[in-house]
Image 1 (cartoon, rainbow, N blue to C red):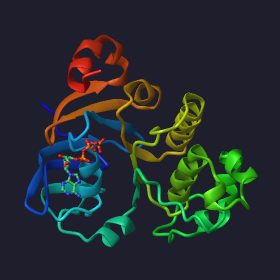
Image 2: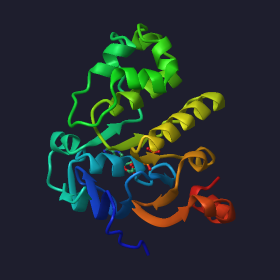
Image 3: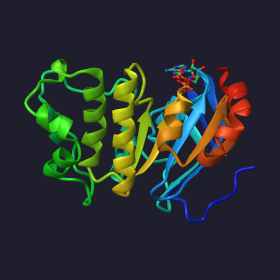
Image 4: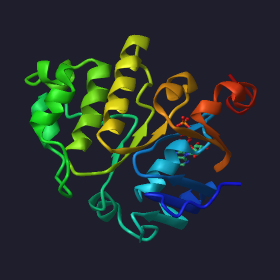
Length: 238
Ligand SMILES: Nc1ncnc2c1ncn2[C@@H]1O[C@H](COP(=O)(O)OP(=O)(O)OP(=O)(O)O)[C@@H](O)[C@H]1O
């Protein structure tokens, strides 16, 4: 069903993953072209987070193929995967409470050239600049989410894996996160985004993959989203 893309930045084929004895992914196929924003939609437990974790090498065992920039990563350790230029922002965001915004931004190691400088990040996201000296604990959920994403942009990573950046945030803050993702896309980054909220996903993405029971079962282009609502409601149970 999913066409092989020879020009993909990330090409995932038949990806399987296990947590201990528990077999969670049963053959996931995903292609992302450079500069695309693509979402993984699906109900709770469909395997969206596990797909991001499996791409990063953060699951117990995996099989299949993950090609990034032409290199096979299925057997690579997670630190090697990060050094290839894939950045991961987990749902819990991982902001260091005792460090301020600038310190949090400077913390992840630069893995390759081409990342944004601190000044560029602050120019692009003035909200963060205003909070430069504020400690992690003092930031709102939205500010923490922005910081968690911005921090990856410094490292030189070109592909960002974002787990539910809209989760738990008020609608006006979700809009800010949406603007941020569109800015990131404009700067040439590629994004794979886990979302439950397809109304938000629609404002940022080029395409959507739908996951069910550890597999990708459908793909919808963003311009076809509105005409595919019935299908999506069925998948997502909303
Ligand atoms: N650490 C773990 N150990 C064992 N099973 C897990 C673990 N994490 C997730 N699972 C199981 O793997 C399946 C897929 O979970 P996953 O978190 O990837 O789903 P999801 O689509 O991201 O949904 P959610 O939005 O609820 O996180 C679920 O059945 C879940 O219970």
